[in-house]
Amino acid sequence: MLSGPSGVGKGSVIAVVRRRHPDVWLSVSVTTRSPRPGETDGVQYHFVSPEEFAAMAERGDLLEHASYAGNSYGTPRAPVQEQLAAGRPALLEIELQGARQVRQSMPEAQLVFLKPPSFEELTRRLKGRGTEAPERVLERLQLAMTEMAAEPEFDVAVVNDDLEHAADRLVELMKIT
Ligand code: 5GP
Image (cartoon, rainbow, N blue to C red):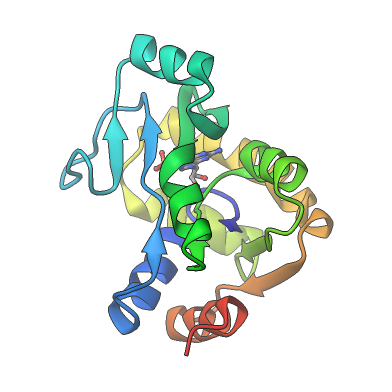
């Protein structure tokens, strides 16, 4: 399971891992956030209404779920269970609250924390991404400070100083050959 502050490059590192190992299975989360330009329903996320999300959570269909920057995010339980039952590794990209829930319900899961080389660099990346309005960037930076403080809760930290290098580490940790 990969976590780390918004803007640190979780998505980019995972993209490199999957380019090298197309068979790596990545959980597709559900979210109530609106798609960003270029995002497709069912690919980056399943985009759902708040009502649909609440119904899924209520039914216990989500392995974990959390609110983040005004939206809800969750991991559909069944696909993860299918992967694990088949003996295949499952990769989850989730924020801190969700990581804590998975830690509780699946103590055997490996929690990897992706961190920026510095907080200044994270600020630069979040602003530079240009996908969020300025007030949203500030909100995400504040959340990032809390998330950075949680690093000791994770099994291992990987610094995203270089995408290829961080992807190498993640591949190593997932024991993919
Ligand atoms: P974004 O809106 O930038 O796509 O995602 C915001 C945050 O939500 C990121 O830190 C991302 O890792 C996290 N996230 C994405 N999917 C899930 C999920 O299913 N559960 C949880 N708890 N967090 C998620």
